Length: 106
Image (cartoon, rainbow, N blue to C red):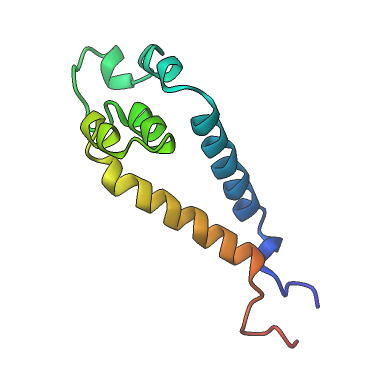
């Protein structure tokens, strides 16, 4: 019954590991530490003041700490990005944990 589970694809397991690690880091590191980090943005280095992703790391940290309105204030795009990330993470978990329906009896 090889191939019954989709966990044969190492990319999904890697995505799950990265997602869990990212969530753990965002939850365990206090926002004050994240707020004092220097910007790692290429646009900022090129002299462009505001890019669409400006503040998204800080917003993700605030969201992980349950401060939803502060996260939205930091960057409103977190409203779009957080559900997308959760969906991608959830779909990777389902692909790894749920057996395939088609060809499972082969």
